[in-house]
Amino acid sequence: MNGVPLRKLRLKLRRSQAQMALLVGVSKLTWGRWERGENSPLPVYRKKLAKLLAFAGRGEEETKQ
Image 1 (cartoon, rainbow, N blue to C red):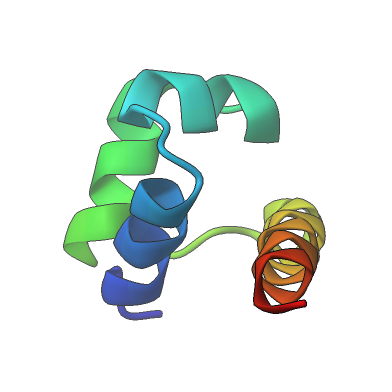
Image 2: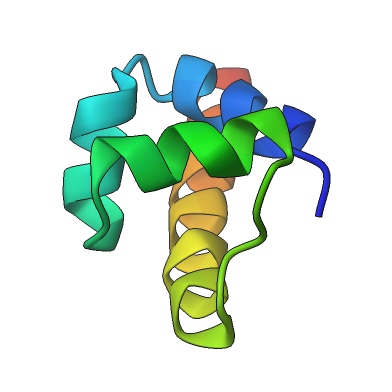
């Protein structure tokens, strides 16, 4: 998994790496590794990331209306 979408998600939500790590349930070191593409999230964390992506997308839709 490429880390670019994770960084974009984090910036869209205006959160730090530490805040995102807390939301997903990992260490900030792990989140940083994901962003840099050094490691990929396990399936359990991918589900949590999908929920965050859906949440970010909803906020984007609301601002367009």
